[in-house]
Image (cartoon, rainbow over all chains, first blue to last red; front, side, top):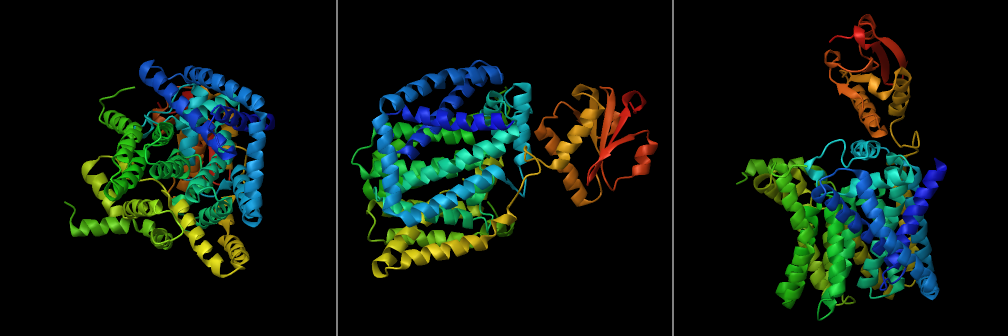
Length: 342
Length: 243
């Protein structure tokens, strides 16, 4: 089991880095990890919709084969790029070193706190089990039966490919579903959440690494402090693999970062819009709760710029970005009202 | 339209959200700090105003619930987004505040690190985490019960019955065992409310809480397989079970 656990960690981290390296515009290790993770989830979501809604099959193996075929090509290309452009890797590591050197005290302090949070999530478990057992049961049923949502198709799961993704990882790596959900993925998700905050800090502080290190340090402290009030913002540390934690910890900070970048430019960038759309797909497929969260964020951001800066392009961009949530809403209502049967 | 008393009921039912008032107030203060910070690009003032709108909706549950209850049928719509952007916004604002202070006092950084570390130590995160009982991070009782059930027979030979208990704590424990078994992978078992419903398999496995009527169970032909701190596991060949 230790070997399988080790292989699961290696697979998830390496495949994320390889896929993230396939994109030319990746700036920094945090960006590589985030792009790799987002791309994986987007491809898995597409495969999920193809398997369930088009092929009309609940087979987890068919979904897994579609996904592995799609991502393996990208991962191999990304791996070749890493080997071919070794200089780029070196420059990313040097940039990381420069970032740490710019503010050594806060950089090391934040690395220590984040490392403790990550190790704690991997080794320990939350005292309150809460909904964990329900989600573990959903994942285990899928792994044992080899069927998507084998334990039953609730309305809130119909558009969510997050738990089938966890089940796929368990089946593919040979680890028990609960180990993937409670030990392997929390480590990756907490790291990615701080990568998202680092990325946001790069935009807000306009590349000032000194302030960004301070920002990351403060964010780690504040997140830990949220535990006092059992605030949902701290659930990232306690139950990171719940689908409803993915949008607020990873997707929404990245959407905010990309929106700020777009708002600072006179014209919107199509590539950035595409990434925002992909982020929205990830949020829509992580949890039904993103039906309101992502549109709320995009509405609030764009409406202010519309009235204060007359930026209609940002509003149109926001409408495009929330299309996955609109589709999610339609599917949710159709399934809840019985008009859609699976 | 929601009446006044309904509104107060909704507010009181969401008192737990207002319990995060300290961070809420900090969140709003930080947004105003962002709006009036002279070091930030003017673009961020619009971002700060946008975040104010999000915070009003996020932290004002009656608004969200009004729409959820009256226009949508399902609580998923009321889930605005857990901790939506609270951490980044507070952190950005605090960085701006620290930068303001750093201009005037040189030793502020060391002070901040020391205060933060004291704050971290004082949080006592031990009250939220514990070392797991097993590698699955499931209740150990569920894993132990699973091993006991495996001793009785293979998955398809067993019908599982859970007996409720009068005590709330015992019911909670038995619920954890029930969900823990399902999380472990025992969903193939027939889980039924009473022995009268057992129709398949060779054995019935009965799981009761420790304070259930042991004599009554044994008199019914059940044989004890094992027990944990909170539950007892019995078995009975199905041909003698009630049909």
